[in-house]
Amino acid sequence: MIHPIYLYGSHVLREKAAPADLSRKEELKKLLDDMVETMHNADGCGLAAPQIGISERLLVVDGNDLSDRYPALKGFHREMVNPEVTFESEETSEYNEGCLSLPGLDADIVRPKRIKVRYYDADLVEKEEEFDEFAARMLQHELDHLDGIVFTDRARPIRKKMLAGKLTNIAKGIARTSYRVKLDK
Ligand code: NI
Image (tube, rainbow, N blue to C red; front, side, top):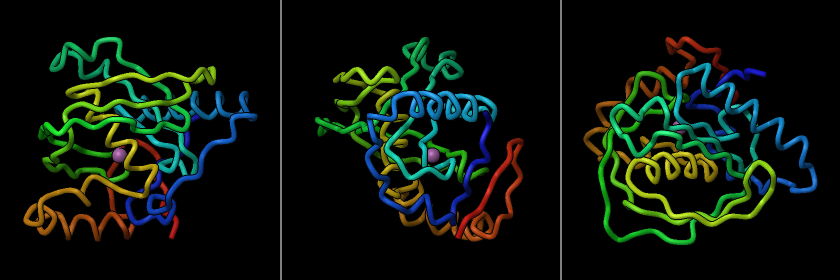
């Protein structure tokens, strides 16, 4: 099922999401399926549960559409329940980011280049994996959503200033998108 995507300005995007209850295995699986469907419908490469109004620690990422530019992303697809970062490299990298909750906006964001994440997959099997480059980038963006952080929070002050007007508009529900959106205050 495709869900509407909550826009910047929505309260749920600013909450610290709660750990998912692992005893609800079938429900979590369905939710992750919905998230993947919602992400693909919006031509996104990542989605966190708060973006569909659910304040739980779930995220999905899919790099296949980006594999022309980043060949290492071919086949990169993860669904994570209760992910936790267990390592961040000191070395950083900078990429241009965007977000389905902030349509039409982008900014260059500096983040650790490599990270290690411990998580449960969609079958609730515990895993720990290291990610680098764009995969690490996508995951850190989604992990931020679980803590109520959006990418523009991490933009350089001058870029933030340039985006201020657009951010205000989105928070008023003024956004052009090909997918259904929602605003909850
Ligand atoms: Ni996002």
